[in-house]
Length: 419
Image (cartoon, rainbow, N blue to C red; front, side, top):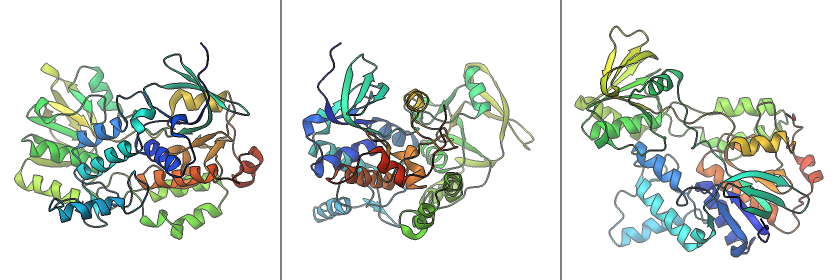
């Protein structure tokens, strides 16, 4: 098949970060719109984002209003100001930190997509192989199409890889009515039986449990700990220099990984989510059961008898909803694996990319999200991390920014190569 004409920027992934990187490149004039592509197999940009947030029943984001997909930090607040003048602004934000309502955030995101005509840039396909060269990267797509791009941005996250605990996975494989809140099928309370268990102890488990309880289900949350509150999933000091100065000061990547892991607050929720949970508990429609899911058996019609560690009696439910987040493994699957094994792109001992200050993993390949966290720190996976990544990538595209491999070597810590 004859290759298509080369494009300037190919962004692999149409989630929030991919959309924002495209917006930043276009807004700063770093790319001809006709020569930018966002490659994602989903039916629409932001499809997985809207699917996952809808399934949990999220009402308000955990991130503040300045973290969104547009360009100017305050444009979400300015949009809200216009609505307030039209007397349509009630409930758009929740304190503290002006956290936006999901519906308001999504409406703004859709407006950003329309404003920058990104639907016309969306290529409904999946990249399967990348072959970096001195002047371009050759992309092989699942459809059989071949593209050549001057630059590629990998925005892979783990949203396509929900984490399944072993016991829950075994019950699912045995025919039990078991589903993951981030699975491919939308979670609808109307399709679930009266008694439901939710496995997990963090924000997603609390949100989906509250959603089901509000829909009239009798819900039992199975968690290893009582509800734990943190406003954010890491201290806000990691956004700026307060903590990042020490992070960047060390070239020891194992130390950086340890800093990232110690900075995160897994299995936590903000105070407003806890209050919603407590209201459901007060009504008697939700129970929080502390203990590990030890085993279980499958009954008729997929019903489940769940055995909890240290519990005297099994828990009888009609369905189990797993809300244990996403896989902690390196995202990107075989596409990223081949870049390491076949093209010898550098990785640290933890298996994640070693990049320069512009997030270049190769002179023509950039990374964001989890793949960039050894440079961006513990917020790399969040919306603010996506905004920081876009700033770095745009900076690399400015005149005078070196794109040579020698420049990468001068700014990146020494990697451990894995073959």
